Image (cartoon, rainbow, N blue to C red; front, side, top):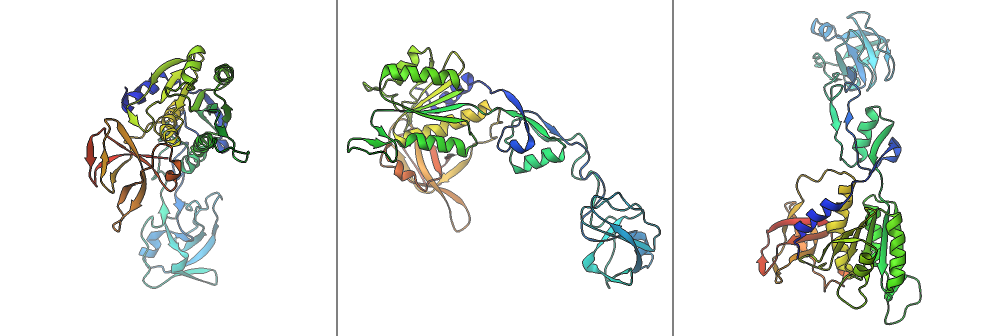
Length: 400
């Protein structure tokens, strides 16, 4: 069987990169940038007033002047005024252009205004360029600000706006289909018999996808009938970029998903990974280029495989730059791994009295015990056993 790392590599080799679209800036939150953003001009684009107060020529104060005539007021957004003489000053507002002839700003708290004059408080000194945000000290025109592959959050959107970009080239959202299989599954709210179970995996998958910014998500349920399965899967393969199935991929008589996909011409890239939970994971590619992730039906296996493989693959297809390093965290208690399989263990991240984060084990009662995932933050990836990993063992953390 493949290791998880080998499965990652095969998925990356066969997943198509999604096309690019140009969207208005207001619609780009959470999208993955597919062009570089450069500074439109210097930032700040002028010598900028950093505090409300008065702008003056610092040399006048050095020469002994403590009381200056207020010539005018310079508001933010107005063209720069010109200081008429060293004996004058100009009231200025935060964000305004520093008036010509001025090289310093004294805060309003350090002056007293009487009869049209501004008097400096006792002990107040004035240095050149104090409380002035000098032009170009943040960024020079043409500087690369944001690189392609970054997911656009509030800071990146603000940077793009400041660079004058009304539209941005981003990855198109993939069309996703979440498909559960099984005769035993009953929708929440519908009458249920003792031998049936609620359809919950699909709700978890759809929610996780939407939480991570994927909004074009269809949802379907198909019973264990090969003809019906092929008919519905054919439709989804023709109309979606990625299919995420839950159930029907093990070795049972009614595990029909691999057979149905094979008869539809979907090429199997791998089936089974040396891991627990989630060993029966199946991945393939249709002739249309659509990718198919068939996840094991046990709820913990479904959620773990979605987080470990599907979500990273989707972000890669968007052109998102991979994280420089995976998140690492130390175990908060010893863990024994018996099988010779990579072990995914749910954890809760807790801080100790020194503010250090620990991955506290929250084991489930098997891969069907999804209720144990409540309150967990994700899972750690432990090497195959048999081995006991002590408290403090540092390993990879995958957050839900």
